[in-house]
Structure formats: structure tokens, C-alpha cells
Image (cartoon, rainbow, N blue to C red; front, side):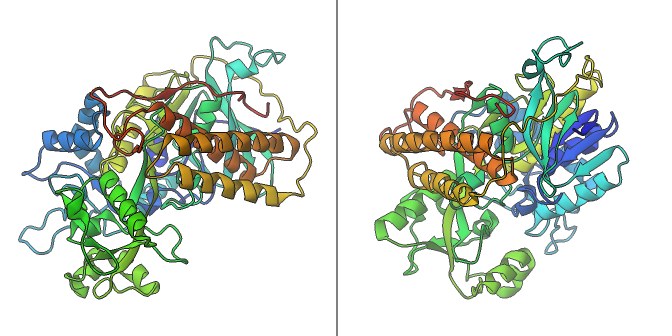
Length: 546
């Protein structure tokens, strides 16, 4: 079996992964593993921008307060203050790497063209047109390509992480290693089917979110929660998984797969209306369309269920075509492709799974409960988002945490303070090539449909218990399939979304209240004290291939 040695192994090529790799390149060799093309990530699809205090009329205290209010009492205030206050320096760093944010052209002197999104009391969202994520991804990839110390390995699907604890008992494998720690990973080369190992004293999980756990999502196909699932199989603490943010406004069209209508459109005055053109948000929150996302998504969900409608509509017809083409060029042209002129037509929208506010319990510097393993970005739960992410805080978190991660690792020995262990070859056992691919597809659909129907925007214990039974049965079937047949990327992703499904359901059942993104009809009130939900056990799970 082929073994690749590196000083730092980064899993994921979004903003958190690439920026971590760029910072770590000055410390040693960095291998970035990404599942598909190197530019395919949630970052690439982020339209809105990066929330940061840069205007004289704004303040860190205001941004902190907005974040705490959105998080419904579950944010770690110290973490929030750290990330908010370090934001301007990290924005400057991003600009030094080559990113250019949109500037105002309507006033003398220009300056940043700051957007305003739901839950923000001030305009503070820096953006690069309406494709901020794509611009960030492009800049970071170009920089990574120019770094001799950074290697980007495309089409690599990490199967499982390798730990000292797992290696113990295998002859000679654990020699020279003291205490449990992460020492690498087994990886599937998606195109050839080869399984190889990566050996590294430090592994950074930056594998993004888990939108594909749900039937309808704004996320790309790669968002299958791989990092969280792998960490759970090792027994790491997984926190606040019930808080799944549903973006209120995804384009409703049979051919418009996962296309998001940015919250910035509502920030520029778009109203939500029903099929007869009547507004409704005033009945749910005094902030109307600019209420936090959990409020807006629930309002849309309620309107659709009450009226039997398949969608609601965004109305920004008070803005002329020239403004819309300049402020939202990509959105405007994409909507036109599907037959909707934003300047003249109502645009049909529905909520869709968008962001994972929970994840692997981690510090701002990426530290996890397992030495040698770090988590940054959407994969991690640092305490910034609490029960509901404030719009455009996610890219800010990635910037700050990647920087902090590098500072933490700079203080540690490059070799991790241990010998490089021997890895056993991948065990194929009696696995054979599958001739039942339809089983995988069926289970994919069943997991995602179950999660959408029973663990969506509005929940009940009855629905959650039904989902738990079904997901656990499916996990048993998937596990047996995983053992019986040669590993494929589809099976690995199916295994991971089923694990994420169980984590979300179990966390939701543990919370006997409605708070932020978790709303249950059985407990509509919010408790006076806020508590995190933490799951530490992976029932029956071992890694790898056992």
C-alpha cells in the first residue's frame, strides 16, 4: 500500500482548509486532500460576503451583540469577541493575498460597499459582487498553487482517520508512540479506486458542512458531513448538532439545483410575498425580511403549510434593472436563465438546508479532544454561532480560526513529538465488487427524505422518534454493505450522511425546548438557562473497516 508522508494533512479545500494550508506552508510540507475538483466547496457557493466591523459608525460591541442575539443564549461570548475583534486584521490579510472587495461608486471617496443582512444592526458585510465565495476560493487556490510546500490532491475521499489507539495490538505499529493521537488517514482515490494512506503528525479537518443530509439544500454535492462523521467514529465530542440552519430563500425551479438567492437581496429591500403579492413577515417579526434566518425560514414554512403553496416569492421590483445588474449580476442572469426577471417578476423561493451550526467540539485554534487532530470552519463547533448563525459570520470565523490554528501549530514540534508509525495495509477482507448499486441510491434517498420529512424546520418528538428508528435501521444496512463490498465514494458518503442524520436526531431529542434553529411543537418555549447538547459515543462504531 502506498503511504504519503507530510508534516500537515489538511482535509478540505474551502476557505478554512486553503487558508490553513497557506499559513502552515511556512512551517513545513502541507498536503491538502479534496474530494472532487479543488475549487468545489461550500465557500465557492457563498454569495453574501464576510461580516466585519470596518465602518466608523459600527463597533465591535454592536457586532458581538448582534451575534449573541442571533445565537439565542448559546454563543460563547469570549469566542465571539475574539473572532469579531480579530476580523479587520484578517480582512487586511485576505486583501494582501489579492482579494478585492466591491467599493461604492455613488459617493466621493468611495470606500467599501457594505451590505446588510438579517440580524445585523449595521451595514457590515463586505462582498465581491454577488460571488464573494468564488472570488475568495480563486485567490486562495492561486496562492496555494504558487507555494512549493503545498500539494493539493484532488479526488481523494478520506475513509477514516488513523489513531495510535487503533494501531495498538498490531505488531510494531505503535512502536515509539506514547498516548493516543491522530497520525494519519486512509484515503480512496475516487477515479482509480486505489486505497492509500497519508501519514502525518497533524491532521486538520476542514471538510465543510452537511447540507446533503437533507433532500433540499443550498450546498453542493460534496457537503456530506465527512469530518464530523469521522470524528464521531473516534469518539470525539460532537456538539449542538440539532441546529441546522435552513436558508429561507433558495430558487424554486425544477432545474435550479441548489441555487441560493442571497440574503443580500432582502438587505436591498426585497419583500417576501405570497402568490397574491401580499406581504406576511410583519405578522412574525418587527424586523420583517431582515429578521434572523431561523425566524424567516419558520415564517415561510408556516405560510406554505397554511396555504398549501409550494413556495413563496421575493419581490424586488422596486429596484430597476440597472441597479440589479450591477449589485447582483450573477443572481440576475441566473434568474433570467430560469425565466424570471428580478426587475419585473416575482421570484419563487423555498427554504433549504444551508449551514451546520454544530460540529466537532473545537477551540478557536482548532484544538480538539484528540491530540494531533484539529478542526476548523463549518466542521467545527467553536461556540461562535450558538443556536443560530448570524449571516456572513461563517467566512469570518474561517479566516480567524485558520490564523489561530497556524499560531498553535507553530508552537508544537513539527513531527508531533513522536516517531512515524507503521501502517497496516488496507483490509479488503472478503469484500467484492457490488452489483447492487441501486441499493446505495435507494438508501441515499431514504436517509435524505426521512430527514426532510421528520427533522426539518418544525419538529415534534413523535417525528424525531420515527426518524431515529429509521435512521438506525438504515445505518445497520449501510454498515453491512460497507463491509461486504469494495469501498466506493458513494458508499462512504452514504455512511457519513446516515451518521450525521443520527447525530442530528439524537441531539434534537435531547433538547426539551425551542431555541434558535431548533423549533419543536412539543416544547415551544425557551428554557431560562442555555445548555449545549454534547454526544460522545458512537454506538458500535470503530475505524477503519471494523
